[in-house]
Image (tube, rainbow, N blue to C red):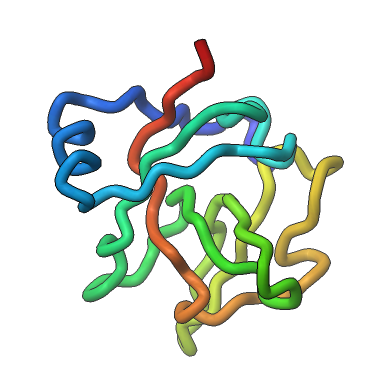
Length: 122
């Protein structure tokens, strides 16, 4: 995708506080599709309220429900948002996993939230 992907920051004290008061969701990365910005075993904090009023922007890293596999959650980068609020989601590592090139644009309603920070494994 891009030659120099934007890194995802480590959590600030504010992000930890938001997690403690349940304003952030913590999720574990399991696949290699977002390497090098997210590695298997990394934890991410997710803002579930990020898109209640606003649309995602190209460049945002988001968590969404897979459009064809109900029990699968995916982490991808937004590359485009169509006028009908459908999202083009892409992997950083196109050789690992699927993205909108395989499953098509996804509706906004499948979004879980925006990744705000990452916690590498110890």
